[in-house]
Length: 255
Image (cartoon, rainbow, N blue to C red):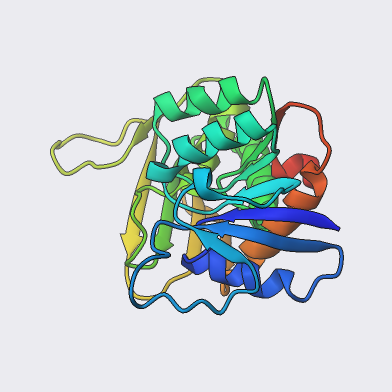
């Protein structure tokens, strides 16, 4: 039985992961962490203990799943490094300094970091790279549009940036990332990728990679209709990371 520590257990994804793990026989959540655990409206319906801080955790775990916020990442990285605990890092919107901290921590523990835990999105990353290789020298402009619910804090999404990175890694010449064209009046350069964000309602997650050429447009799309696809990916990642050596891993390794 793989024992999991869940950071961000009271968030939307934490709830979904908790419900999913209850139905699986070979993995269990032994403790959760969430700064909201002392709030009056917290309903202690979990079968595991919930703590406000990693330093309060008493239970021993085999792997940690983090679906929290960028503000909580430094604390869980420090905790996992001290405990030699493998970490599935699902939180996006990290600063460059935090990314450097992830890299440094991976010298001590196994870290699986992914902008998106969905199998479909990770396939989309590969398809975007393949399309770039085929189309970049044929005059196609590349745009990325992402849509999420109104409660999402970071923009653009980590997945949108990962898609842009996949395009850039596959390209012969690097593209510039453009997040707004509102303050300029000029023809669109061929050397840029426009990344647009939409926030509204309860949209779980939609990503389009648009290759726009003369008289034709190719669009690679992924739509998430439920958070369960991300929860399933995180659980599979935790199983994969169990007993892995120190280093950085991705969902491509899981797949």
